[in-house]
Length: 344
Image (spheres, rainbow, N blue to C red):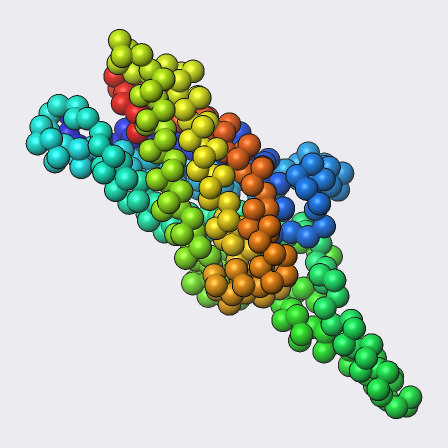
């Protein structure tokens, strides 16, 4: 069998669909915690979303990821598996054999998959986060201009107070860099669906707006996929007895879940930055880039902000990745018609 195998892409698509369905509710909670306001902790966020939006609030915006993340995971798993297989075969110079996987080939293949994932995944994540966050009520955090306006009012002559009050909304809007729709429609959803969201972003921010947060996603996904695929491969090898050629479904579930928890837990700081950059723009434009987002977030909330959502990220990573790897492995074996599917 050659180094390029199309079935890896098909199996990745099936696994991606399973992971989206399993992990989306907690993904909504994670996004609200990282980029929203008014949520104290994970359980408080779950209660708030359920009380205000019912159970459907956890699945808000899922249709777009279900259609697109499946393609995204298909490409990621296909690129990783074929790259790793090519590197291993070149290293062993035995193209027809099943060469052993080396740490260097796993590392390089994971990095390639991480880079490719940014090109496909940034618009997908952006639309998903915008749809998840539009239910977040527009609110001025701690009313940053309130003290200033009160002090200005106290210095004005009494006859000028009316003029000051009339001009106050425009001053406040300019201070917060509000988008026009945020002033006129702050109680209405910003987007009517995925297609309207894409059209709105392209119209207001240009085509480059679909790649807002791409640099943060690159810093998250390249190391993130290294800590995703490599632990999975080594854990399955460790759990599987030497007498067995392939890992059992239980071994795949356990190794896949552990790999997902490790990857998502360690990726949380940069995931926070990415979520804030991509959520920025639903109503406000506060951040100029990755460094500015890190600086503002640290100055306002301290170091703990970068670990916001780490619990739900880690917990979500286990079942989502377990479903991803199990769907991939089982579908790959079914496509090949035997039990000789190799781990990604």
